[in-house]
Length: 407
Image (tube, rainbow, N blue to C red):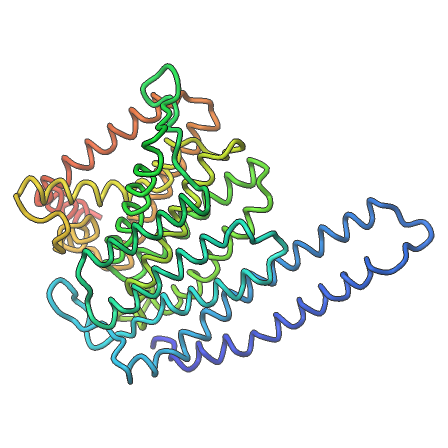
């Protein structure tokens, strides 16, 4: 039997004691370092205590984000059913019954509350919070009553401009992707940044087509970014990267199809996909562009490879068929896997494995010192293979079906 909704909600509320215990320990540590140094104590002892306090405070933030998100999902579900903030099965949507669209709201609120507990300066991230808030509000309105595509694009462009003009997070350098000198964008930096941010947001939105997929891809992407930030010495960035991972993990408890669970109990909605897409876009750019960049621009492509490949590929195929590139259909990679007979959890696991492999390949190439032009050429080769395979989707389905039969 699937775990009842009430049981999960009670679990999150019971776990609040864990937060209080961590908070109490943090307070005691803080009190100890405020006291006069004891005989024999050294500056190194106090520094170690400060580091321990910071680590515990950041752990508290992640635990709080996880528990608050889970609790809010449980609280908001009945409210969503009453006010009609639900997704109905129609068109390309294959779920049964009405599913609350409150996952994005819960994740955003859990993230904001947890951020306040971090031991890190937050003033530089104000544009991130404002841009995310804008997208969540527009997403909620779209989840209530589907907005025109143009309205959502305007909101995404506005959020991207907040990121570029206010936050100073801009793509100005593409690296030496063609060999020789690095390509500097100059006056084209802001337009290119807006294009890239809107692209990442919509790539994640398109990945939110089967239960658990978008959340798993976000955890994969931010996980690799956290690893590279840590290896690059950006210790103050890592805790902020781990927060969205914790809130998405809580969301997946309600959204992933675990054994004996027929479908998700909550969706993230456009509010969630645009919020998470914006978070991913922010850190992909921030970690690949500043003077102490943790990743190269081409490595960023590999870390977010599968959503990008699928989005660009399907939009090109729609254009070649003289259809709108923004028209929803059931021709994404996850739809091909489902058509081949794989169930939803297996399809998610396969796509996640490919995403981890692609991100791992990009990170390995960077750490091995491979030149940008070679890594970029490899990405273009991967895209060509992907595009060819998806253009011949029915052959791919037959191949996958035959492989599955032989297992």
